Image 1 (cartoon, protein in one colour):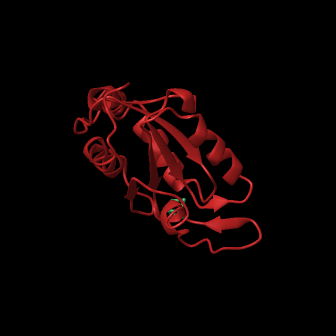
Image 2 (cartoon, rainbow, N blue to C red):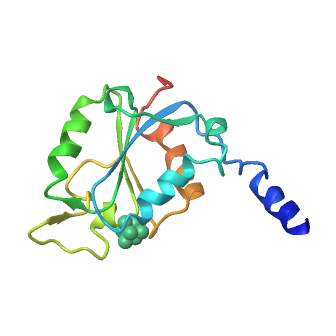
Image 3 (cartoon, protein in one colour):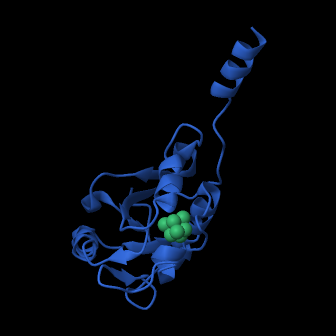
Length: 155
Ligand code: SF4
């Protein structure tokens, strides 16, 4: 009985509250890597976090997005996908690299399959370091965007 109570208490604990960011629609593209950063982004959208209270929401099409959130090193296969997503987004829009791989390639060098990080390759509006960054760090990194990139509350 005590075990059941412990499981239920843990299962139904309140969602972790994150700082408010403001209305922002985010489209996430994982371009490769170990999936660690992608899992942290997915966790952010999960039941453990009260994402709606931050103003952030994930969208399933770049046409509705304010922010293109990229995780993983840029692979040659995913480069055209990322470019297509970026061009489909309305202005104003922002490009954000999440994690060491997306920023500078991290442990993945440049090779026949991998181009490297976005730094110096694309105009980044924000870089969120970490390997991987926590969901709270990702929200904190996005919080600065409204002032920096000229994004308005278009969501
Ligand atoms: S930054 Fe670290 S956790 Fe994120 S994809 Fe690269 S190796 Fe994985």
